[in-house]
Length: 545
Image 1 (spheres, rainbow, N blue to C red):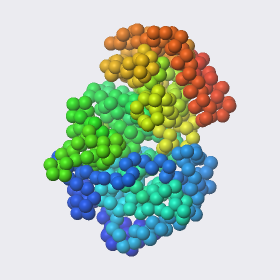
Image 2: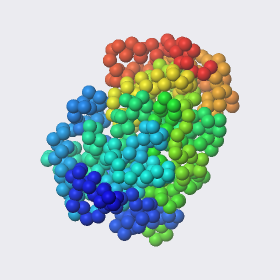
Image 3: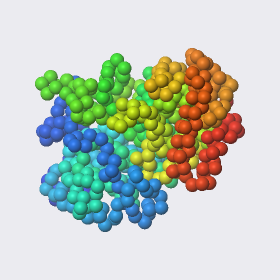
Image 4: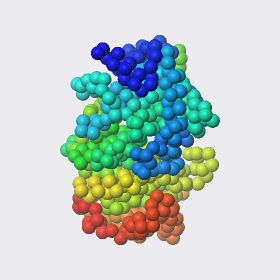
């Protein structure tokens, strides 16, 4: 049976039928032609594609739902990020979407999620727009790059993407005209009312977060790289903590910048592309990413440009601060593709502590690592958001709460088990303030951060002596190559020991309050032990040294 007819039959079985045209797995140059012909975007000076997403220039957080069905009800972490949606409402909306597509053309991309063939999931993206099909082709693993043809095989999950269809909240049960609804039992995602391409990427990440724990794979919202000796490092961190900057190291090869799995034998990238935030991007500060934005095949989302000269302006935030570039990871010269590497030797948790009470670096036991992983702590500073006039603690469990389909405890326990089993070092690095809080102290020098990170990854901190912090129980090295010992312990950088202790204890109370929201009383007793450092560094962590 011809591929086109097979795809048509597969879509008809879903209820998507009577289509005018089906464009299946078009190569990037042909998708470019369709984008220009359909007037979906513009060609920039160096060959990138410039597109606009309209009203939504970021994720529609309040418009994401998960269908509450019998098979997933007891597994999903219901609440702020995973709102329940009825099966009946989903079926009704799904039928309306299928009817809406009658007589229209669609683009179909069959891709893979997961660079490790043992855990890969075939995914099918069906969309109205050629540029969204190009986005899917760019962001996920392309079978053709692996010398494979997955043909018309049953996808493990399907994304039906209709950005120009708008829901009716009173009838459909949605929060607004936009919707992102995951039906985990049927392995189906409905996205509508928003053209922001990140919804495609993150909906699939959420599904991977749901599926992989049952295969003993820890899904991670993290970047990863590998050194010349094959030593792998994983980087967790919220926005503004330096995750992208520190993992993009010319001395090391990039495995991936955002989503990974940690199995019993490797670390692997879920994706085949990068989706970088590019507001203020410069050739001098981030040459690798800048070069990637100038190539054919890159999608520049909501980046401003001159319609006459076709030159882009990364400093123009008139449309949004969340300007993005989607490009194949091969555009990064030192990238690993497919993104598969060995077991990690180091896990790094980054935080930008605006209260100035956490050290530049500390070694964590697996129990402490689980604790800080559950917190996902960083801090906002004055001026970053309206209404923020002083440092404000912010928490995102597992460093990616909006995408965690299961309770954060599931992922934290898996992390602890893998750290112990593989004897992995875990580090907490503060890229925030030292010598006092924001407005009093100073931002951690990037050279200091790189020096402590390099020392950790190179093994220079394995055999040094450590002190235990009285407030947080953190294990702080007494010396670090290339770093003034006076700044290693935050208490020594403050003018007043009393002021430091008070600030540290206030932050610790915030930690305890956040943890109490995530766990029951039994786990809180464990929390009290880990935050007070009652776990022995050698006995608890099985880490090197």
